[in-house]
Length: 277
Image (cartoon, rainbow, N blue to C red; front, side, top):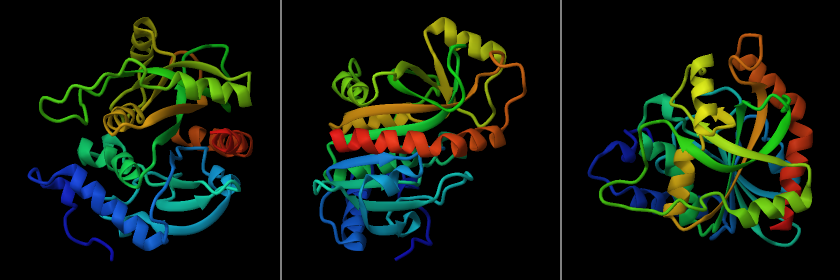
């Protein structure tokens, strides 16, 4: 049933992993699928991939699942979808991302990832729309995430929890993605807090620090996925060149338009990568 009371993750005494386990139980009950193999979070521009991966078994409004929040951003559909591939694998497609800038706290930001792990998914694919720092990149180009800079000053890990992030974004999965599309480039993703876009000086800072992609998601989710023992593939759709790299002002409408134009191509690419897993 829908959760009309305060989100259980807002209770400091709540165990976020127990909330994730309850959410996974909700998903099993609402979809009729007891376990999933792969989870995919669809960011801006990636939405059609769900239709291309396989047969949709069930679609559930995210707010009917414990701990999930209503999406605050246009371009995110607010559903959880269970998809069966032709090979019989079960894919949990997450179209309900909570961004850090919404102010709900890190627990809610990473709840979808922890829930995916609790459903049994061992692979987490995180996608987003982001700004590109490399001048050779063009709007509509997909790139792989090889590493990240977490510039949010936050972490999903609580207490004395020490997790190795050396190979956070799986080299094996990046190689697999390149076997599907050898032209895929890769770079370091920088998560800023948002919701404002970065200044040209902040983009140059990210570049000096070794960053190639700037956005407002993914890094915190990837850390939580690693804590949960998942293997992670990250992909960004370059929706625009970052501030100071391109000459025109940035806008959310530009991001959405680039996503709409690129969606058929990148969604088909993601579906082929999932098929190859």
